[in-house]
Image (tube, rainbow, N blue to C red; front, side):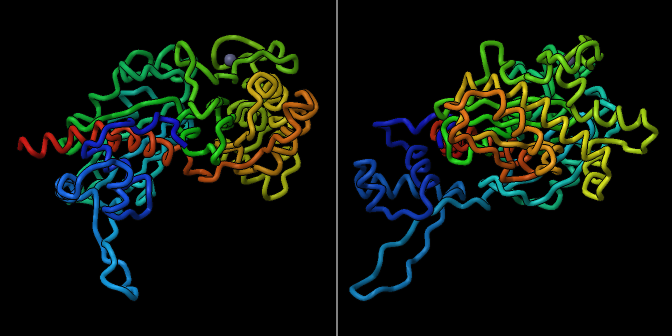
Length: 395
Ligand SMILES: [Zn+2]
């Protein structure tokens, strides 16, 4: 599904031919001719330019009866790498991915308290440097960076975050420029739930992707397009007020937010108040799986409160699917038992008749894979590839 826009019609540049090849598994020159109207010579020169960048490879088909079969062209996902950094409140996950967004290497930074950018970002860059050493010869096409809260994509920083203290307005690209191999490489940022939504649409055009981790947020895909909202703040449902949370203090400074009773941080805090030794939501999920009744109850209740808030969104947007991502999805069955109860109980029959609730297909990797694909859709777009070819020709 084309969340990031479609291939330009009527154009048949090198980038357009690449977009066609990337879209298909295998394609012949004749098929490219049918799609673009280009001559054999024009196709040959475009393929040569793409082969020069290493982005396209040719191979012989298995011989059949009746003459030599045409060669097949395909996108070479091993021609380069992208990096992905999914910053979270209790964990930052770093990945190296190939040009198809498949994870080649992953590292976690566990941080027990939210760190400021000057504490966390140099560590992120240092670890990426170590990971990059496994891939010395491959060009780095870009870095995808996802953060909780509202992200100013143009300025490359967090904005008005109630959660990430000290990050507001701090440009994050310069940290990556410290590393020579990443200097000048595109850094593309988005909110964490949006990054997940990019890869968790499950082929549907209307999808609500919720990230239920330390905090709560949603990525909204409507009519096949990711909706960021007028101020890029769409999906921040963690600070919706609910009756059950009345009077409870939230991390945002307000009281009564759904996060203050259902967010992972609130669940951890409540268990710690009971003297339990849990450090983060992943610990809570682990003891829930071991049969801890209190942990199971709290995860189910979290699902109930989230479902209560989501019911309004389901009535408004009528998604085909609600996808559950984030650390809560580690206890998917328990969380969703609660979520279904209030979601189906509070949303209209029309909006829920065919509604499905499913776990994130990429599991705990959905954030990092989403960050990688977010970059790939930009740096491998038809226009970006045209620019690469122009640069290679000039050089
Ligand atoms: Zn709040």
